Image (tube, rainbow, N blue to C red; front, side, top):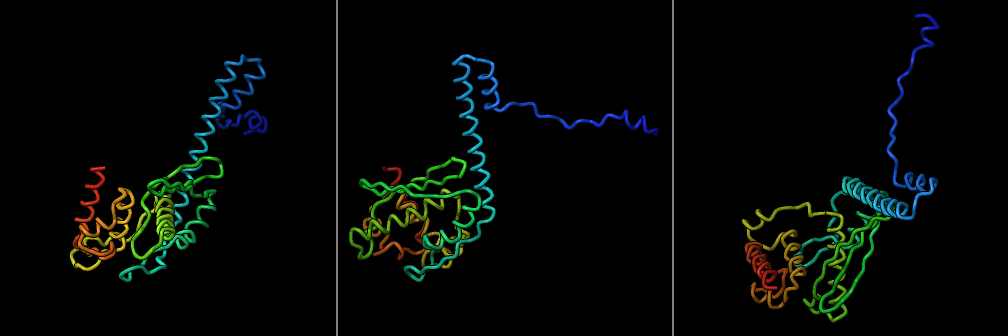
Amino acid sequence: MSAVAKTNEVTPLAPVNTALTPMEMLDRAVSSGAGIDVIAKLMDLQERWDKNQHRKAFDAAIADAKAELGPIIKNRQGHNSKRYADFAAIARTVDPIISKHGLSYRFRTTQDDRIHVTCVLSHRDGHSEDNTIAGPADTTGNKNAIQAIGSTLTYLQRYSLMQALGLAASEDDDGRTAEEGGPLSDEQAEKIQALIVEVAADIPRFCKYMGVARIDEIQAKDFNKAIQALEAKRVKS
């Protein structure tokens, strides 16, 4: 092919995205002297567009963070030698990963006849979502009034954060434990505790019904009985 022919060749152009963002439309409207009604509508459109973009960034950050989050190490030992992860262990696992993806959390607390804890999960672009759970003061054991409130606050913070991030226990041995007898598995105990908080159950009355002095004395074979009793409390309330 000659040099002239090569010169006359036309290189295909890449497709151009001609769609305008609301801000670009607003700039053009202002430049062309559009009326206040048109500008107001475009400003409202821009606000909705920004919120949608921020929500998408939030969802993407959550998905990326969850892909990196590994199991949370159970670092404490409670009743009946059951191990669990305290809030410090959860934070050590969660904080470095979510902060890398522009996420952070904080808590709001209010109290009336119950203690309410709200976990506010936020993204650096501005979108945030709230997750609130509530429960009565934990009066089990020999706690004084302040200790009872502190115990519930810690519990609600742990679980509101776990729910906000969509984290779940990695163990699932309910069936095996129930067949073998013995104490509740960690996951069974957590399910009962969470349901007690959710339905604001009377703990001493519930324990009496289950024939135990403390919740952690409930046996695996009675797990379904405990859940059914608490669900019945939800229906009544």
